Image 1: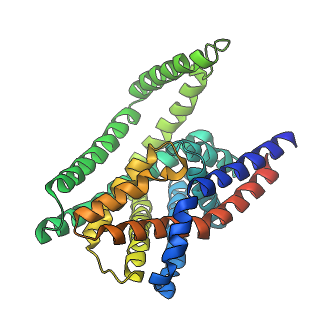
Image 2: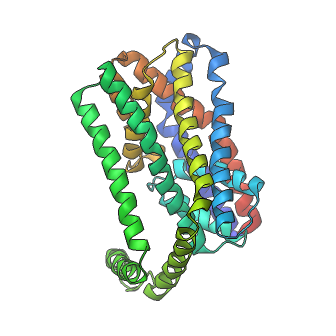
Length: 336
């Protein structure tokens, strides 16, 4: 019971921090409501719900490919919870990985399988987003609506995402390589943690890490031998990306701005990468700045870019963070 109380208080505190940090943006968004078409803005809700549907279906089809039948309803709930966890706790997505493993454990899915599912989700989302990035880059290039620096950064991001994905596949595809990598990684992390916990020289047990990644390798081999089973998860990863870009575009339309869709695609990619390494919850401040900078470079007025970005971020939080928190708190009460 004590842990249940601690987790729930921590989650409520994190939600409060997000609201406090974004208080100025919330005031700005409320002030700008008179300038937008509310009916169009409300389209954000079904589009975002469809995005969560696509992510839930991704996990469902992915686990089916591994021979595990999960619950679509349960996975949809978890996706809403993950949205809260990833935005409330500034950890570059690490909190989400840990939380997903914790939740799926109660669905009979091992830590290794849930870890591989997260890796696969990020990898396939990166891969599927390449198509959108290429499309966005071409639209901006031929219409001459972005600076050379923005186009170069977009190309670099695409190349970097592909390189990271290929590197991950290279490591995980060989048992010896993955053992060497996990041993090295665990030792590095333990050395860092030893600075703060000198009484615990091995906070992360190397033998346990090897067991987990050994199972991860076996699941990878199973998927590699049945590549056709990944087509459906890739399809849903692509739909999730399209839905996220469409959500942002809807807000521009609500402001009466039919902007270059290529700029939105690239701005979304850059903003998410910048927000992932930000210190503040949800990448507040960094995300908005990067999004606005890219849109301005594509010829969108600065005032509109900032207003739309803030409106999109705040309404997204208002619509879905409370729901995610309630589901998160209920899950902790039932499973902790």
